[in-house]
Image (tube, rainbow, N blue to C red; front, side):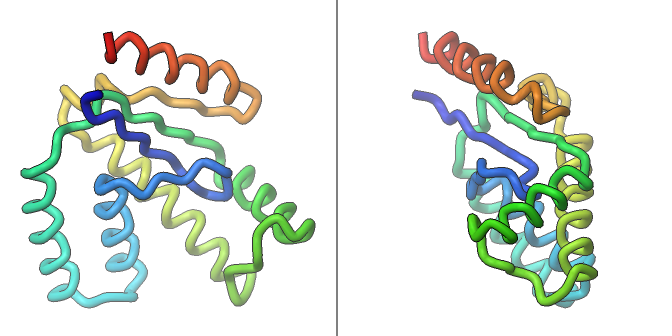
Length: 145
């Protein structure tokens, strides 16, 4: 099947994608947050662009765009119930990472070339996830034919 790639706002949701597309978001966040320097950033971006030239473009980009507050609450609930470990040393760091990643995903989506923006499907509310999932599946089936 042609490259169907999912791009999601991980925040704290159970869906996680580690596609090449997400590397761009990761490195931008790391640079803006001050975890890497400009030379490291430029080197990573250069490699990312070279790899991008070798890969097919995604047919579908699924973007789960829940509010940051929802992601933070979901993460806290999962930590309290032992569903996921506490990954952040404090609440301030957790907020920095979740809001930073959310901003990077939105920036990435908003700056896609027009032909890729047309492939973005967005879910803005947790209550809509079942319908959204069905829409993704139907779109993938249609593309596969």
